[in-house]
Length: 203
Image (cartoon, rainbow, N blue to C red; front, side, top):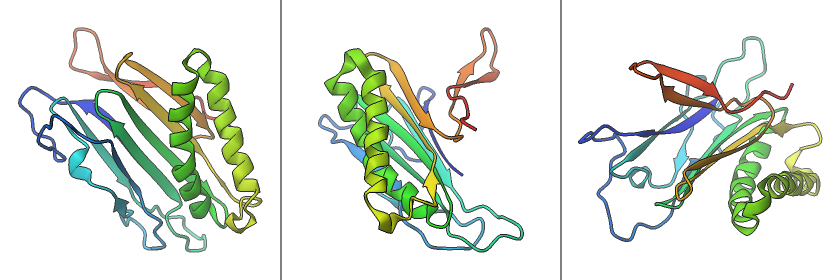
């Protein structure tokens, strides 16, 4: 299962993905690549410049390894993920868990099409994000159905997309399926971290 997240760094701390600050930092996008490896516990290949995913305040970590299904036919890692960031504006964290014969193809396709649609929709209609985001999911579903080569009639994917609006300091969450998103918070007057679910699994 793929996972990614953002965390505020401690003062003076250096992230494993640290970069030097720049006055004109361009948008950054990194994501999983289509990977046909069937070896369990293999880390999925990554596309993009991971060194540009951190700044002086925030760092991002991610992991996506192929699991093991005892007794099942060998399959490639069917999970996909993407992180997109426009410094000081918006960040997007998304995971997709494919299932079925061509679930890896479907999850990779949705990874490429859904997140950017959601960003554009929220900017175009900030007063009605719910309707505009639901429309994005319907459009992507329609696109899957129009491409029989993807095999979406017998395969599919979950989708969990978190938009972090840095300007308004809001998290906007949308999802289909059971890829759970959680928000870690520091408990009041304690160093303990508490996990707050952001999604409710669709079963």
